[in-house]
Each structure stands twice: as structure tokens, then as C-alpha cells.
Image (tube, rainbow, N blue to C red; front, side):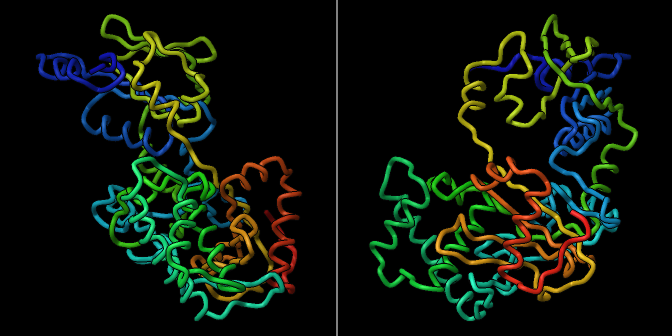
Length: 389
């Protein structure tokens, strides 16, 4: 079995330094200032390691980013604590900081981060879908997903989840829906796609339900994740705008080279950059990473979800957590997170995932807002224009 070079993980040779009498503390360079990099740096610093953190951007947090331009905190990146329990390593820190969580679902929600009762769904003509239809379709969707487990047991090879759903519906005609209930089912599939940030024909039947979702339900961070990042990063040796280009392992030392020509030397390095950076081969390794690691980087995928946050002068929408638009296909469905219910601020956040999110990135900010508002006005004809986005 291939082993990673000594310096690319805090491995055995570091312990020799600790055991040695009067030895200087072992040094580690953490590359990447997202939540994992900051958490690793914090843990090492607390354990008396000499830690240097290098981040290529001009800010910390990575996919955790709280925007304050509306005059209130809006998480442009991560928004939830998934699993409000002590098993979640962030929960005690959030509690210690006195940060408020707004609970959006319990443990058994078929749509993961929201309970079905918290939605107001609308059809193409702006009519609200009766709650009893939403609840009934939700139960049907749950039955369909459970039946896909049987399909998985029968097939050695993997297949897209949507293919398994088709097999289930062929076998169980009583689960087939038509008309408005069918459109609500497509909306449920749209929400599933949002959870995985990819289209349902790209979700693995073998693996879609294999993640370990912690207990305690899901809590929206009312004050944003920014205080968590700031607390974890306090008093660390952090270098922003330091884009790493090469990592060299030599003579039990790790040399990290930065784009501007400077370099840092330590006993080891921890690499927490996004998967996309590793896929793009932006960082060169000497010696090269072992084949098993390169293969894992090549085979892993990453989803995409975009958020369009809109601030309004007045609240013209129902007092529910999520507004949704049903449609004949999951791609044509959409939904808005209502931050007013959770935070008191007149803000809606449109969530766009999968291939549609890729297409959305080709639009300018103004075009994005124009499209999102056209969707919102189909749901709520009395919608006013946003004062900020």
C-alpha cells in the first residue's frame, strides 16, 4: 500500500520532535483558509505546534462567507448547522458564542433541511398549491425513495438515481402522479438536487443516502457563520493573498512555494484547498502524489449551487420559510429561502443548483436579478422590485 510522503501529513516523525527533550515545537504549514484549514490550524496551535496558514484569497472562510452589504448578515456560502447536537464539533462553539440558530427541520424530513409544512408552493399561474397536496406528495416521494433501495440491492452496477426512480414507478403504478401532484413531485426532486447541488441524473443510486446525517435537525445561522470563522482564526499566524504554486518534500522538511516567489519551510504541511484546485493541478508536488491519491482526485466530483440574495423595502410574501414554484420538470422548478421568518430582515434568497447553476453563472448580476424577479412575479404577481441584491 502506497504511503504519503512523511511531510504531507502530521505523521510519525512529528512525534519524535515532541518526545525529544528541549526540542523546538514541530512546525506545520496549513494551505487553505477555509473552515477545515482554520479548524486544523486552531487544533494544532492549541496543541503547541508552530502553525502558519496560507490563504490565496484576500479573506478567510472559503465557502463560508457572510456578506454585510444589506446592513444585516447574509451567508452567501454555508448557512446551516446540519445536525444540532454535541456530535457536531461546531455546535459547542456556536453555543459558547451565543449565536442563535433558527431550526428549519427535524431529523426525519424527506427534504433534509426543511419540513414540508414550512413551504408555500405556487403553480405556473400563481395559485398556491393546497397544503394537503404538498403533504400527500411528500409521503409518496418518501415511498419512492425507499423503493429505490430495493433497486440498488438488485443491481451490481451503479446507475443514476432518476433511472432507479423510473424503475420504481414502472413497478408501482399506484405511486405514479399526474397533473398538479406530478409537478409537486418534480419540485421535490428539485429540492433533492439542491441538497446534492447536482442534477438527479448525476446522483448515484449506490451512494445518495450513504452520508451520515447527524441528529438534532438543521439550524439556520441567524447571525451568519462569520463569528465562527473569526473566533477560530483568532491569534493565528495567517497570510492572505498567498497563492501556493508548489509543495516540495525534502530531507524531512516541507517547502511551500508561493506565487510571488516567497517560500515557507516547516516539518509538515496540511493541504485543505478545494477539490477543484487539486483537479486543476494548480499546485505542483515534488515528489508527485501517489497514484491512488491522484485517482481519487480525478474520480471525485463536486456540485454547484448559487444564491441570489434580494433585499426589499416591504414584505409581500407569505410567512413561511420557503417559497417554491412547481413545474412539469425539476429544472423548471425553483425556490426562495425567506430570511424574514428566521431573521426579521426583508430578504429572499433564490437557490439555484446543478446544470442550471452553471448556466446562471454566464449571466451578469443584473441579468440574474431580472430572471429571478421574473420567476418571483409568476409566483407572487404583487412582488415589488428589490432595493439591493
